[in-house]
Image 1 (cartoon, rainbow, N blue to C red):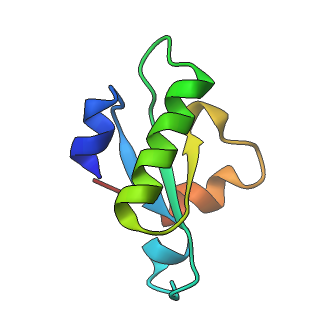
Image 2 (tube, helix red, strand yellow):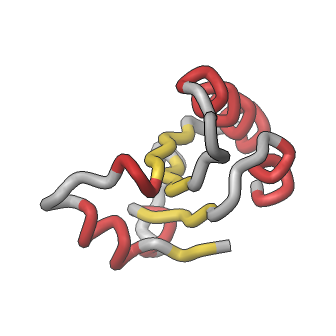
Image 3 (cartoon, rainbow, N blue to C red):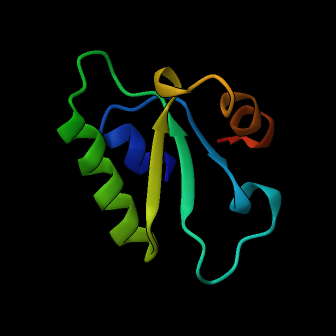
Length: 83
């Protein structure tokens, strides 16, 4: 995952949610917190999301560090395991 994110120019990468807490099931998606490169477009983010989903064989949800919202950001950061 780290190499793939780096190939797209993304910096920091962390997993959070059920995977990070060790509670994932076969139906769980993978929640990732990412730092996109300066000037990244939504297309760049969706491109990485699609590539990760196809590589990992399960849905991937991406949240950017800059896109954290008050109220849930503390939960995300508490669970986050950086690579």
